[in-house]
Length: 207
Image 1 (cartoon, helix red, strand yellow):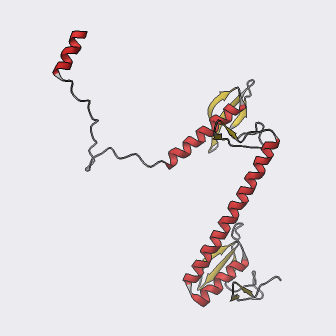
Image 2 (image 1 turned 90 degrees about the vertical axis):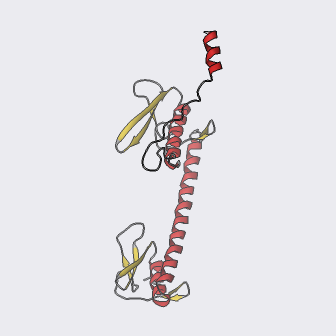
Image 3 (image 1 turned 180 degrees about the horizontal axis):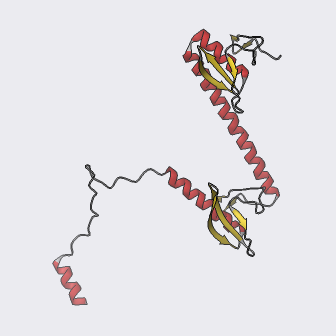
């Protein structure tokens, strides 16, 4: 039921009795891309839509592998755009939710990391269990790294945002220029220029 005989100007290859209803289209068991197109015993692409997979198979048969790859690339681009749109929508909803709770999205020119479901409303910021104030921590690989304690929640959120920003900048920075010469010998640090005789003399007189 719900099978499409034509799409994208192509006649699709129906196959009654198969799991998908289309020849050359199989289920993958994957959540993100549950269908795959297979031709000649080889997978030619995975897709979110069964019709997209059927189109890929039809393109492969009618126009060859290059046409199938072109369709796969177009579907990947469409999927990526949909994911970006969904991410933007969720971000806008989160910002709206945080605004309703009186949370700030920016402080001192730095974008804060919001966490509407947390007790403080800010990612990386925790209530100080030993008294008043807040502590900043980074959770990674099951461990928590303490980044400091603050009396003001915005200062705590700022510290976390600046730390994350610094890590991101370090990860994308180009590698430092090699300090070694060809052949593996390290350059010696440049020494300051020697002090002229008259300068040494003046230094001696002034001491």
